Image (cartoon, rainbow, N blue to C red; front, side):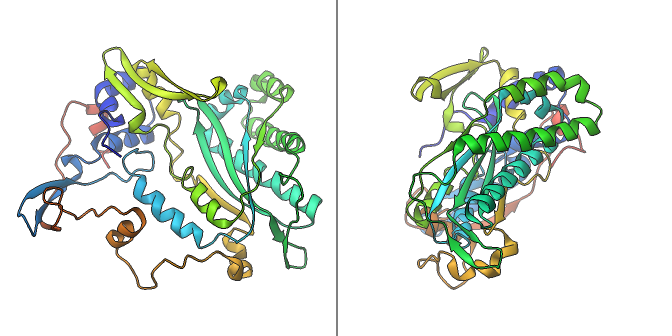
Length: 384
């Protein structure tokens, strides 16, 4: 894929100061924006590489490695997918997506960490309840949190991969035999999920003495029909592993979706799912773009990928013989470079000039102080 013309770092550099003055983000959000802005620049340091064939020299800048950075996810994604393939049980899987009504966005913005924790808890509690009551087993789930819609609006939802198998009460492994396309009735899932999620949210609001103020929001969300989306089963674990790569390390927007940055704001394309998933352009002001982008910066240390039931570490010893093994994975220990080359086919040390030699580091260049254009992001306590 070709390098994008525009990126999120340019938007932060151009509109960040105005965004800070108008929206007053917290210090953690500022640190995240700073990391994205200086990613792969001299601020984070670099190293000089020389080709052992043609003798050409290049400067390679260090990455920020922040999980919200669009530039830093490809390698993490490839490694994560392979590591996860080692813990996937060889059985059928179902893709289930749990969403909440947009009325709850107000409550989500009050305490995003508490809201997302309640979302995870209610999703797994619902799936576990259905596993016990319908099939007599403790099922499992691989749950991945996404918080955005295509236009960067707040849209919290959890993607789940649910195995058609589980552990019985006496600890025996059991495959679930299903004649239909779906593991559970989505209408029943929706109703149970709604009850569990609203119970947890009301408890949080009651503890914070905020329930009277937001009771009308709770009532409106309860009156709406909640949606749980389900897809037919995958045929084998190989399809599951390929499917995982589409959802694991996404960020709110990729750099390739950005069409233009100018004084009018930021233009990018999005899929309109209400119009047959047609790709359409849209434009937001720079401040509004950053405001929406920052809504999807997860709370500090919050885990967005979680394993439950038979896919959790707690049951690893019971399911070790049922896991899918990758015969192509070498037994000898690999370096990060060797592993990425095997997984992606990209050789980061191949000379970009002659395409024959290998680049070797001849000098380490230390970090430099960030330029003074952006004082709010360069304060000593905020620099990463």
